[in-house]
Figure 1 (cartoon, rainbow, N blue to C red):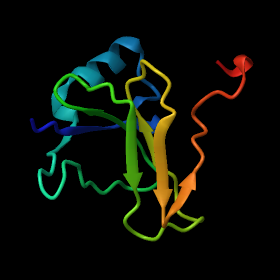
Figure 2 (figure 1 turned 60 degrees about the vertical axis):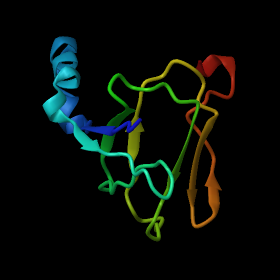
Figure 3 (figure 1 turned 120 degrees about the vertical axis):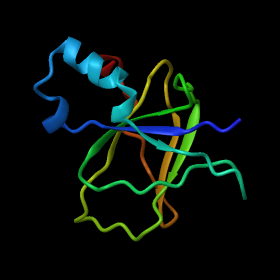
Figure 4 (figure 1 turned 90 degrees about the vertical axis):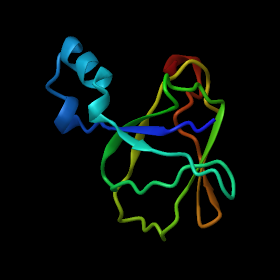
Length: 119
């Protein structure tokens, strides 16, 4: 089954001034999302460019598949002076399986709390 990757612009400049009701309406409005079809060959995945220095709310499939692992590959050389890209996604379990690699370097997953005071 082809599960599209759905991408919603989520910068603070867009959602920062929204109240709870406005934010919920923004997230539920499907016309606000970009839809990236799954590539079937050579393997099932998505290829999408993201603009550095921005935030995106992402989810997979029609209702948002709750994945246990995901690999994000940076196709172009990434320089330390380049901006960051932030991905916000549904969270129902610890995401220790998320790996971010660039040029063979594995970056630490700093999204998982290391001690109970950070939970």
